[in-house]
Length: 489
Image 1 (cartoon, rainbow, N blue to C red):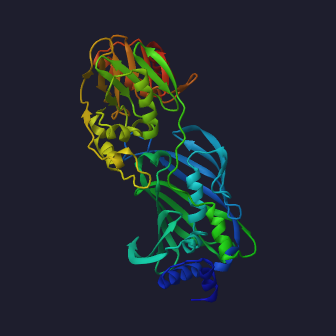
Image 2 (cartoon, helix red, strand yellow):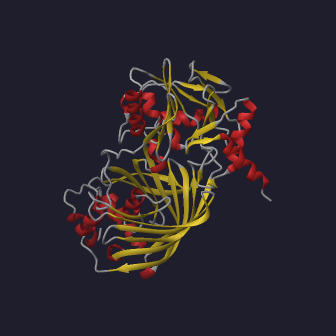
């Protein structure tokens, strides 16, 4: 083992790494251009071209998926522990290309900063990119106090050395090609972020390929694949590098620098604000980024959706109990399989509340209720119980009296995994994720067409409708929008 690496190790007090693990690290540093060069790297700018699969917005969880195409620039500043991402995004979610810029700073890990906003680049992504990118992952491994070499594995049909360590309090696995000594993949187990937040403990894996010679002779990968729980979600080409250099930092300085990028597990989540409107006697709608509702019946309350998260679902439940005192929650209608619709269902399962959904959603619901949440245990993890799911294959009636609720499967092309509700007494329709508009700009009018076809098929006669993304609207307005769309030349 060379004296440079030995000096690095001595600086990390309490380092208990196995000598074989340090040998693997040393060979990998050498293959990438040398520890001295990499410790001199202050910043890295890369051109990025790639695509992101909208796993949470597509027709089916198993695909095919909507695609967002990304063309941008990423800047990593290791000196200040900050990351900046600028992109132009286009695709189904962005029919007109949109420009995004976002910057995160982690110099103070207790007070991270953010400027701007971006599609698909979160604070958690930025932390991971800073600490576990190829240019820094070896230093992050050395900074841990439990670096160990595991038994080798076969990855991409090639023998790989397997390094295990903790980044903060998150377990990380680093695969290093036994022949080239270049890193091939890094995987961290983290609390899910964004769409993945409902899936509990998520395996974030980044796979690198097509290594190339960068300035000053260091080696960098040009192909990046991002996987979540074994599902490939993002693919990028990174090149046209611009590198910033400085004097080599001491090993402890490198460790301190990276500390700004180490996430913590736990902590309270911010409450999501909502406002409440009455759409009919005994029917209230909770308006926020994603809407839900409650229907008072003689023997209890029916919820329309358990959205976003367990914390949010519980906040809605608390309001329902105050608004309708003494009335039990008798059921929740989950009208779609997209993550905002099902994000709060685990909380309701923990309370024994029955769920109404359509049969094609059986697999994704079963996966959701079996998802491990040991890093941040939720109520279902703490108090396991089986879900009571009622699958709606045809008309289903809940309750009686003025707020009798009829539930129907949509059975459409895009809407094959959705259902809708109808209150015949008030002629009020509850639509799932099909009514979306901003002023006169309507998103995917075909969804309205599938709703109208289902309503005609089932012989219901709504006068107004409210929805997951819409306050009450006249049903005739939907018919007019559909007619205008069909009349276009």
